[in-house]
Length: 328
Image (tube, rainbow, N blue to C red):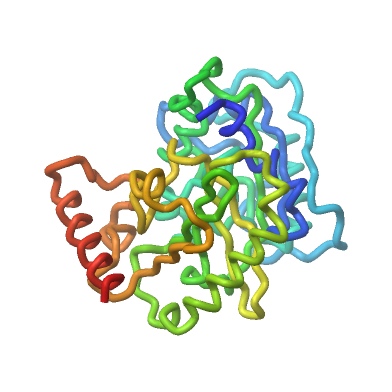
Protein backbone atom coordinates (compact mmCIF):
# COMPACT_ATOMS: atom_id res chain seq x y z
CA UNK A 1 0.00 0.00 0.00
CA UNK A 2 1.36 3.39 -1.05
CA UNK A 3 0.63 6.78 0.48
CA UNK A 4 -0.91 7.95 -2.80
CA UNK A 5 -3.40 5.07 -2.64
CA UNK A 6 -4.46 6.09 0.86
CA UNK A 7 -4.73 9.72 -0.23
CA UNK A 8 -7.01 8.92 -3.18
CA UNK A 9 -9.58 7.54 -0.74
CA UNK A 10 -9.99 10.86 1.09
CA UNK A 11 -13.44 12.24 0.41
CA UNK A 12 -12.16 15.67 -0.64
CA UNK A 13 -10.06 13.89 -3.30
CA UNK A 14 -12.63 11.54 -4.87
CA UNK A 15 -15.90 13.42 -4.40
CA UNK A 16 -15.39 16.14 -7.08
CA UNK A 17 -14.91 13.45 -9.74
CA UNK A 18 -17.87 11.30 -8.68
CA UNK A 19 -20.34 13.83 -7.25
CA UNK A 20 -22.90 13.15 -10.02
CA UNK A 21 -23.22 9.55 -8.78
CA UNK A 22 -22.79 10.21 -5.06
CA UNK A 23 -24.65 11.78 -2.16
CA UNK A 24 -24.69 15.58 -2.07
CA UNK A 25 -21.79 16.76 0.07
CA UNK A 26 -20.23 20.03 1.17
CA UNK A 27 -16.63 20.00 2.34
CA UNK A 28 -14.80 22.36 4.71
CA UNK A 29 -11.08 22.57 5.33
CA UNK A 30 -10.59 22.55 9.10
CA UNK A 31 -8.38 25.15 10.81
CA UNK A 32 -5.45 23.66 12.66
CA UNK A 33 -6.82 24.98 15.95
CA UNK A 34 -9.92 22.80 15.54
CA UNK A 35 -7.77 19.78 14.62
CA UNK A 36 -5.79 20.27 17.82
CA UNK A 37 -9.08 20.49 19.70
CA UNK A 38 -9.92 17.02 18.33
CA UNK A 39 -6.46 15.73 19.31
CA UNK A 40 -6.86 16.97 22.89
CA UNK A 41 -7.70 14.08 25.24
CA UNK A 42 -8.62 16.14 28.30
CA UNK A 43 -12.25 15.05 28.16
CA UNK A 44 -15.32 16.08 26.19
CA UNK A 45 -15.39 19.87 26.15
CA UNK A 46 -17.81 21.36 23.64
CA UNK A 47 -16.88 24.59 21.87
CA UNK A 48 -18.59 27.76 22.93
CA UNK A 49 -21.26 28.43 20.31
CA UNK A 50 -21.85 31.86 18.84
CA UNK A 51 -25.35 30.60 18.00
CA UNK A 52 -26.40 29.53 21.47
CA UNK A 53 -30.03 30.26 20.78
CA UNK A 54 -30.17 27.72 17.94
CA UNK A 55 -27.37 25.28 18.73
CA UNK A 56 -29.99 22.53 18.59
CA UNK A 57 -32.53 23.92 16.10
CA UNK A 58 -35.89 22.23 15.65
CA UNK A 59 -36.22 23.21 12.02
CA UNK A 60 -34.01 24.77 9.37
CA UNK A 61 -35.38 25.93 6.05
CA UNK A 62 -34.06 24.83 2.65
CA UNK A 63 -32.05 27.25 0.55
CA UNK A 64 -31.71 27.21 -3.23
CA UNK A 65 -29.57 24.45 -4.72
CA UNK A 66 -25.93 25.44 -5.21
CA UNK A 67 -22.78 23.69 -6.31
CA UNK A 68 -22.37 20.34 -4.53
CA UNK A 69 -18.67 20.71 -3.89
CA UNK A 70 -17.22 23.52 -1.83
CA UNK A 71 -13.90 23.51 -0.04
CA UNK A 72 -13.83 26.37 2.43
CA UNK A 73 -10.57 27.91 3.52
CA UNK A 74 -9.49 27.35 7.09
CA UNK A 75 -10.54 29.92 9.62
CA UNK A 76 -7.15 31.55 9.67
CA UNK A 77 -4.84 32.31 12.53
CA UNK A 78 -7.04 31.69 15.50
CA UNK A 79 -5.93 31.80 19.09
CA UNK A 80 -5.17 28.63 20.95
CA UNK A 81 -8.36 26.95 22.22
CA UNK A 82 -9.47 28.27 25.57
CA UNK A 83 -11.99 27.01 28.11
CA UNK A 84 -14.31 26.56 26.34
CA UNK A 85 -12.74 26.81 22.85
CA UNK A 86 -14.46 28.88 20.18
CA UNK A 87 -14.41 28.58 16.38
CA UNK A 88 -16.84 31.26 15.18
CA UNK A 89 -15.83 31.37 11.51
CA UNK A 90 -15.90 27.59 11.14
CA UNK A 91 -19.21 27.43 12.98
CA UNK A 92 -20.73 30.03 10.64
CA UNK A 93 -19.57 28.09 7.58
CA UNK A 94 -20.94 24.81 8.93
CA UNK A 95 -24.24 26.40 9.90
CA UNK A 96 -24.68 27.69 6.34
CA UNK A 97 -23.82 24.30 4.85
CA UNK A 98 -26.32 22.51 7.08
CA UNK A 99 -29.00 24.90 5.85
CA UNK A 100 -28.04 24.34 2.22
CA UNK A 101 -28.23 20.57 2.71
CA UNK A 102 -31.79 20.70 4.05
CA UNK A 103 -31.19 21.02 7.80
CA UNK A 104 -29.57 17.70 8.67
CA UNK A 105 -26.19 16.17 7.76
CA UNK A 106 -23.97 13.14 8.25
CA UNK A 107 -20.41 14.24 9.21
CA UNK A 108 -17.10 12.57 8.41
CA UNK A 109 -13.43 13.50 8.26
CA UNK A 110 -11.01 12.71 5.41
CA UNK A 111 -11.64 8.98 5.59
CA UNK A 112 -13.87 8.11 8.53
CA UNK A 113 -17.20 8.91 10.13
CA UNK A 114 -17.62 8.92 13.94
CA UNK A 115 -19.90 5.87 13.91
CA UNK A 116 -18.66 4.64 17.27
CA UNK A 117 -19.92 7.78 19.02
CA UNK A 118 -23.49 7.69 17.66
CA UNK A 119 -24.64 6.46 21.07
CA UNK A 120 -23.86 9.85 22.63
CA UNK A 121 -26.02 11.82 20.19
CA UNK A 122 -29.61 12.74 21.21
CA UNK A 123 -30.96 10.78 18.21
CA UNK A 124 -28.66 7.78 18.66
CA UNK A 125 -27.51 8.30 15.04
CA UNK A 126 -25.02 10.45 13.14
CA UNK A 127 -27.77 12.87 12.12
CA UNK A 128 -26.60 16.38 13.01
CA UNK A 129 -28.45 19.68 12.77
CA UNK A 130 -25.89 21.98 14.42
CA UNK A 131 -22.19 22.63 14.88
CA UNK A 132 -22.49 21.58 18.53
CA UNK A 133 -23.81 18.14 17.61
CA UNK A 134 -21.03 17.65 15.06
CA UNK A 135 -18.35 18.69 17.55
CA UNK A 136 -19.79 16.31 20.16
CA UNK A 137 -19.63 13.34 17.76
CA UNK A 138 -16.14 14.13 16.51
CA UNK A 139 -14.69 14.76 19.97
CA UNK A 140 -16.27 11.57 21.39
CA UNK A 141 -15.08 9.23 18.63
CA UNK A 142 -12.20 6.81 19.03
CA UNK A 143 -12.43 5.61 15.41
CA UNK A 144 -11.38 9.03 14.14
CA UNK A 145 -8.00 8.46 15.76
CA UNK A 146 -7.15 6.56 12.56
CA UNK A 147 -7.67 9.70 10.49
CA UNK A 148 -5.81 11.86 12.97
CA UNK A 149 -2.84 9.65 13.72
CA UNK A 150 -2.67 6.28 11.93
CA UNK A 151 -3.93 6.59 8.35
CA UNK A 152 -0.49 5.91 6.86
CA UNK A 153 0.70 3.21 9.26
CA UNK A 154 0.36 0.41 6.68
CA UNK A 155 2.14 2.28 3.86
CA UNK A 156 5.37 0.79 2.54
CA UNK A 157 6.60 4.26 1.58
CA UNK A 158 5.42 6.04 4.73
CA UNK A 159 6.72 9.57 5.07
CA UNK A 160 3.69 11.20 6.70
CA UNK A 161 2.45 10.78 10.24
CA UNK A 162 -0.80 12.61 9.45
CA UNK A 163 -2.40 14.41 6.49
CA UNK A 164 -1.18 18.00 5.98
CA UNK A 165 -4.82 19.16 6.08
CA UNK A 166 -8.01 17.79 7.56
CA UNK A 167 -11.44 18.21 6.02
CA UNK A 168 -14.95 17.93 7.38
CA UNK A 169 -17.42 16.52 4.88
CA UNK A 170 -21.09 17.22 5.54
CA UNK A 171 -23.31 14.79 3.64
CA UNK A 172 -27.02 15.33 3.13
CA UNK A 173 -29.03 13.24 5.59
CA UNK A 174 -31.56 10.86 4.04
CA UNK A 175 -33.79 9.31 6.73
CA UNK A 176 -35.21 6.76 4.29
CA UNK A 177 -31.94 5.00 3.41
CA UNK A 178 -32.15 1.23 3.91
CA UNK A 179 -29.09 -0.39 5.55
CA UNK A 180 -29.66 -3.63 3.61
CA UNK A 181 -29.04 -1.75 0.35
CA UNK A 182 -25.45 -0.83 1.20
CA UNK A 183 -22.71 -2.96 -0.35
CA UNK A 184 -18.91 -3.08 -0.30
CA UNK A 185 -17.19 -3.79 -3.62
CA UNK A 186 -13.66 -5.21 -3.74
CA UNK A 187 -11.54 -4.16 -6.71
CA UNK A 188 -8.31 -6.03 -7.45
CA UNK A 189 -6.11 -5.09 -10.42
CA UNK A 190 -8.97 -2.80 -11.54
CA UNK A 191 -11.35 -5.79 -11.68
CA UNK A 192 -14.46 -6.04 -9.53
CA UNK A 193 -13.89 -9.44 -7.95
CA UNK A 194 -16.26 -9.49 -4.96
CA UNK A 195 -19.24 -7.74 -3.35
CA UNK A 196 -20.36 -8.02 0.28
CA UNK A 197 -23.47 -6.93 2.11
CA UNK A 198 -22.27 -3.89 4.11
CA UNK A 199 -24.50 -4.31 7.18
CA UNK A 200 -23.41 -7.79 8.27
CA UNK A 201 -25.09 -7.74 11.69
CA UNK A 202 -28.55 -8.50 10.32
CA UNK A 203 -30.23 -11.06 8.07
CA UNK A 204 -32.40 -9.42 5.42
CA UNK A 205 -34.66 -11.97 3.62
CA UNK A 206 -35.35 -9.47 0.82
CA UNK A 207 -31.73 -9.76 -0.32
CA UNK A 208 -32.23 -13.44 -1.12
CA UNK A 209 -34.82 -12.45 -3.71
CA UNK A 210 -32.87 -9.56 -5.19
CA UNK A 211 -29.33 -10.98 -5.06
CA UNK A 212 -28.87 -11.70 -8.78
CA UNK A 213 -30.42 -8.42 -9.92
CA UNK A 214 -28.31 -6.44 -7.44
CA UNK A 215 -25.16 -8.19 -8.58
CA UNK A 216 -25.82 -7.31 -12.22
CA UNK A 217 -26.76 -3.72 -11.37
CA UNK A 218 -23.64 -3.03 -9.30
CA UNK A 219 -21.37 -4.77 -11.79
CA UNK A 220 -22.69 -2.62 -14.65
CA UNK A 221 -22.44 0.56 -12.57
CA UNK A 222 -18.81 -0.16 -11.76
CA UNK A 223 -17.95 -0.77 -15.42
CA UNK A 224 -19.70 2.40 -16.59
CA UNK A 225 -18.81 4.87 -13.84
CA UNK A 226 -15.80 3.79 -11.78
CA UNK A 227 -13.39 1.38 -13.42
CA UNK A 228 -11.61 3.83 -15.70
CA UNK A 229 -12.01 6.88 -13.46
CA UNK A 230 -10.49 5.86 -10.12
CA UNK A 231 -6.71 5.73 -10.45
CA UNK A 232 -5.80 3.01 -7.93
CA UNK A 233 -5.58 -0.61 -9.02
CA UNK A 234 -6.64 -2.09 -5.68
CA UNK A 235 -9.32 -0.55 -3.45
CA UNK A 236 -12.80 -1.01 -2.05
CA UNK A 237 -15.93 0.90 -2.95
CA UNK A 238 -19.08 1.29 -0.84
CA UNK A 239 -22.29 1.82 -2.79
CA UNK A 240 -26.00 2.23 -2.12
CA UNK A 241 -28.80 0.95 -4.36
CA UNK A 242 -31.91 3.12 -4.38
CA UNK A 243 -35.48 1.89 -4.56
CA UNK A 244 -35.64 2.81 -8.24
CA UNK A 245 -32.48 0.89 -9.12
CA UNK A 246 -29.88 3.68 -9.17
CA UNK A 247 -26.45 3.12 -7.65
CA UNK A 248 -24.82 5.84 -5.53
CA UNK A 249 -21.21 5.92 -4.34
CA UNK A 250 -20.90 6.23 -0.57
CA UNK A 251 -17.15 5.93 -0.08
CA UNK A 252 -13.80 4.66 -1.33
CA UNK A 253 -11.48 2.79 1.02
CA UNK A 254 -7.94 1.45 0.60
CA UNK A 255 -7.25 -2.21 -0.08
CA UNK A 256 -6.59 -3.95 3.25
CA UNK A 257 -5.09 -1.29 5.58
CA UNK A 258 -7.91 -0.27 7.96
CA UNK A 259 -10.72 -1.61 5.72
CA UNK A 260 -12.89 -4.51 6.87
CA UNK A 261 -13.38 -7.44 4.44
CA UNK A 262 -16.84 -8.09 5.96
CA UNK A 263 -18.15 -11.45 4.64
CA UNK A 264 -14.78 -12.29 3.06
CA UNK A 265 -11.26 -12.65 4.41
CA UNK A 266 -8.36 -10.67 2.99
CA UNK A 267 -6.52 -13.92 2.28
CA UNK A 268 -9.20 -15.21 -0.10
CA UNK A 269 -9.60 -11.79 -1.69
CA UNK A 270 -5.85 -11.70 -2.34
CA UNK A 271 -5.41 -15.22 -3.64
CA UNK A 272 -8.67 -16.98 -4.55
CA UNK A 273 -10.89 -14.38 -6.18
CA UNK A 274 -9.29 -12.90 -9.27
CA UNK A 275 -11.84 -13.30 -12.08
CA UNK A 276 -14.57 -10.73 -12.67
CA UNK A 277 -16.41 -13.25 -14.87
CA UNK A 278 -17.09 -15.18 -11.64
CA UNK A 279 -17.94 -12.26 -9.38
CA UNK A 280 -18.56 -13.49 -5.83
CA UNK A 281 -21.52 -11.67 -4.25
CA UNK A 282 -22.09 -12.56 -0.59
CA UNK A 283 -24.99 -11.71 1.67
CA UNK A 284 -26.00 -12.96 5.09
CA UNK A 285 -28.00 -16.01 4.01
CA UNK A 286 -29.62 -16.78 7.37
CA UNK A 287 -29.71 -15.62 10.98
CA UNK A 288 -26.84 -18.02 11.69
CA UNK A 289 -24.53 -16.00 9.48
CA UNK A 290 -24.74 -12.59 11.16
CA UNK A 291 -21.58 -10.90 12.44
CA UNK A 292 -21.11 -9.06 15.75
CA UNK A 293 -21.97 -5.39 15.70
CA UNK A 294 -23.98 -2.74 17.46
CA UNK A 295 -26.51 -5.35 18.53
CA UNK A 296 -23.80 -6.63 20.87
CA UNK A 297 -23.28 -3.03 22.11
CA UNK A 298 -19.79 -3.13 20.55
CA UNK A 299 -19.09 -1.85 17.02
CA UNK A 300 -17.82 -4.58 14.68
CA UNK A 301 -14.61 -2.57 14.12
CA UNK A 302 -13.76 -2.75 17.85
CA UNK A 303 -14.57 -6.39 18.55
CA UNK A 304 -11.55 -8.41 19.72
CA UNK A 305 -11.21 -11.02 16.96
CA UNK A 306 -7.66 -12.09 17.80
CA UNK A 307 -6.90 -15.84 17.63
CA UNK A 308 -8.38 -17.68 20.58
CA UNK A 309 -10.85 -14.96 21.52
CA UNK A 310 -14.53 -15.70 21.86
CA UNK A 311 -15.38 -13.61 18.80
CA UNK A 312 -12.67 -15.41 16.82
CA UNK A 313 -14.53 -18.68 17.36
CA UNK A 314 -17.86 -16.98 16.62
CA UNK A 315 -16.55 -15.73 13.29
CA UNK A 316 -15.08 -19.10 12.42
CA UNK A 317 -18.49 -20.67 12.99
CA UNK A 318 -20.12 -17.96 10.89
CA UNK A 319 -17.61 -18.56 8.08
CA UNK A 320 -18.30 -22.29 8.16
CA UNK A 321 -22.03 -21.62 7.98
CA UNK A 322 -21.51 -19.25 5.03
CA UNK A 323 -19.41 -21.84 3.18
CA UNK A 324 -21.98 -24.53 3.88
CA UNK A 325 -24.73 -22.35 2.46
CA UNK A 326 -22.62 -21.51 -0.59
CA UNK A 327 -21.88 -25.20 -1.26
CA UNK A 328 -25.55 -26.09 -1.00
